Amino acid sequence: MKKSLLAALVGGIILFLWQFASWGLMNLHYSQNSYTSNQDEIYEFLKGKLPEGEYMIPTVPKGASPDDQTKLQESLAGQPWMQIKYHEKWSMSMPMNMTRGLIIDIVSVFLLIWILMKIPDLNMGTSVMASLFVGLIGYFTGPYLNSIWFETSTIPDLIDAIVQWGLVGLWLGYFLNRN
Image 1 (cartoon, rainbow, N blue to C red):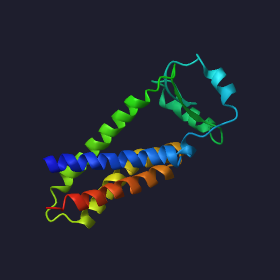
Image 2: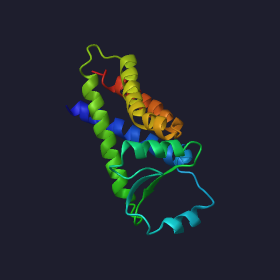
Image 3: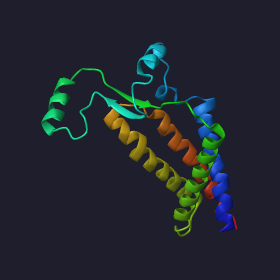
Image 4: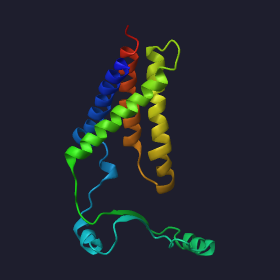
């Protein structure tokens, strides 16, 4: 158990450091948070007009009939659409968010270790491939699946899935196979 906890701690730090590099140092995710020169006008227009939440515009109200949904779909062909995540006030707690992120990374690696320890004769190749598969499952069922419906770019998420889980797989393949 002590070995698994140490492996999870180091693996979680590997994930955390890659995420910091990906989002911060390399800014791979810029395409998912792009700047617009119209932001001040958009900001002033929306400020105070929406309750906090996530919006798809245009859409039909909850409980709309299938006929209303069909009419909207037909009228949207070739028209603009958007998604909005609206918050009433900025309240970013960087230390708390980073702490929560690190904890989630450590727990995620610990769950992967539990799976890996069920594999008889675990070796480096199996550790790396299993780790990559876990990363790709997360990518396919999260960012990529959303991109199918909402036409978003997920290349940065794919890079993250491959690099960070590949690095964790290398670490675990090395560490878990030591006597």
